[in-house]
Picture (spheres, one colour):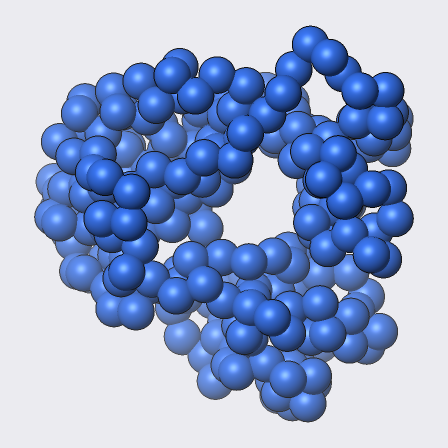
Length: 241
C-alpha cells in the first residue's frame, strides 16, 4: 500500500548543513533532557526518552551530545525549566496547523509563533481550535532500502499497525497511539532502528493548496520549524502537481 504521505511532519532544509545539524541536535538534546527529567534514564521504561534517542541516532548525533543532555537532566539544571506547549491555527488556504514546542519562556514562544502566523497570512487560534481535525496516532518510519514494500507492510500489520504508506524515500507506518511501543519494538527486532518512532497528529482530511497559497504556506511552515523552541509541526494539506 503506497501513496503520498499526508501527515508526515515537515522539515524544510535550508542553509549550510552544519547549521541545520546544530539546530536539530539542540532540539533533540532538549527533548532528551526533558524526557529524562520526566521518566528517568532507562529508555526501556521511558518511551519518550527511547523516541528521542532514536531521533538522535537517525540524525547521527554524537554520543557526547546525548550524554551531556542526560547529565544535564540528572544534575537538576536549575537554570532552565522547560514546558510542553501547543499552538493551533490556520494557514493560507484554510490549512489547519498544530505546533508543538518545548520552551523555557512561554511568552517568548507564543509571541514568536503568533508573529510567524501573522507574517504569512495565517491566524493563531485558541487551544483545541483545530486539533479536532486530527487524530493522535503512533508513527514509525523506515528508509525504503530496509526491505521490500511487501515485507515491511506484512511485518507492520503483524506487529499491530493499522496501515503503511510509502513515499519516494520512506515507509511510514501508523498504529493506535497506545500500541506504539509494541509495534516499534517488533519492527526494531526485524529491521533495526527506525528513522522515527513517536506520537504524531494525523489529519482526518486534507485540504488541497497550490500556486501562491502553497508557496506562502511552505514559508510559514519553514519559519515555524526554524524556531528553536518548536519540536514538530503538523498540517492538513496536500499539494496538486
